[in-house]
Image (cartoon, rainbow, N blue to C red; front, side, top):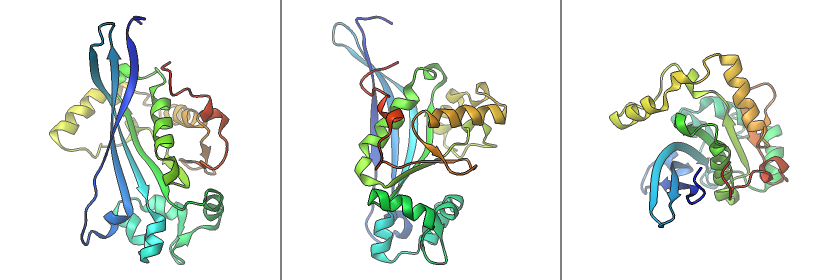
Length: 228
């Protein structure tokens, strides 16, 4: 790498909100994040390359409680029935006991859900995934009590939900077929990635979680000020 070139990542966070009778949309913040690799040469000329896209959802459980909104409707309308069933007891409209205990330790009932993290092939293996994840966890730190994700390799999805021309072009650039196709190996790699960041696996499921209220030496080791 040219020592005269300064390289860093820039994450552009996008969030929209609406007024009116929008029901479940009121209780979730959807963050669309574009990740750019920025390079500044010795003449201070800056270049930016779009290298990744991220989708994050913040479930505003505390606002649900305040408005007496039924959480079953929230997750079913947003196609996250599996996540809702993992976290909540729908009979009581409250967290399951084991999750409530974790939430109580954070004094914040909101759930940060890391939905998708996509990095173009030529930028993989540089440690960018860890930097991106840590930036999100730190940037939204005061907004959630538990961060959770489903560690399922994107290349193993039968079909990708993005259907627009722009997203189809992006999926082509992602070259999912180039990624590990053996499900056992792909899952093990992804599990190890999140474990190295201090995420804990929930029982033997594909879900991992992190409680921001506790020290996380593994996350602390990731220097967000340096690229690998």
